[in-house]
Amino acid sequence: WEQLFGFLNDAERGYLSVDAMAIDPTDDNTVYFLCGCAYFSDAGTRIYKIGNPVEIPEYTEVKKDPYFLCYVGRLSEVKRIDIILEAMYRAKGPWKLKLVGNGDIKDAVEGWIDLLKLRDRVIRIDWSSDPWKECEDSGIMVAASEYEGFSLVAHEASARGKMVISTPVDGVSDYIRDGYNGYLFPQENAIELAKILDGIENGRFKRSDPIDCIESVRRFETCSYFNTVMNALEEIYKS
Image 1 (tube, helix red, strand yellow):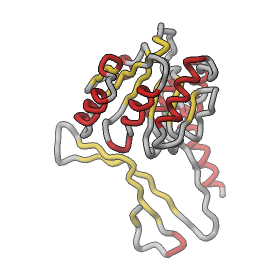
Image 2 (cartoon, one colour):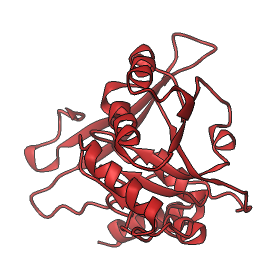
Image 3 (cartoon, one colour):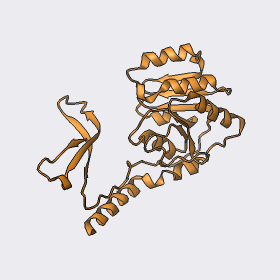
Image 4 (spheres, one colour):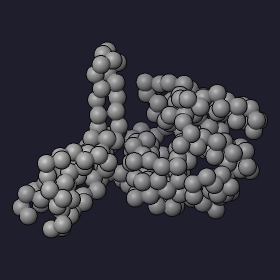
């Protein structure tokens, strides 16, 4: 957090948070920032947790491989791809993984796949303009991140009827309910993730209904999101 308005007094200070940035592909000198500004007052501070808008496409039933997991996102250290691969190695079922994404640990990921002898069970796709199209045959999205701000990818997976198995990072722990729309497991714990996979495989843990997964993120749908923002602004204005 960085102080935004130095001329405000201590009771009215504003702070700027930069959540993400992107460089214009047509102009290296243009950078876009996704920012949020918060104000804190000793008179009473109200914090509205709104999240990000999520597009919910029309659901179409597609035949899925019951043992196909998918991961969509950057290949970076904080995403802990090694935990996902180790869990697949430990699990008793013939789980497979579709890994869609690229990043600075790509070579390390390739090494882990070979080390754990998972080459015939992992499909790597460096980049796709439509990653969810690549994952149509998977009904389970898995993530093992150390931290996330909101985990839009998990919400997008739920919006497409996929159950989400994830570490309890911000955004995910707010809406994932064990046995309803997915499962949570502790950070850095491949053994617990493997237990969940085994439980799903032997029927001890139920598979989520795609419609329940979709409904679990309905409140983040674009129109609902802007209604939430407007209601918060109106409440602030009236107070």
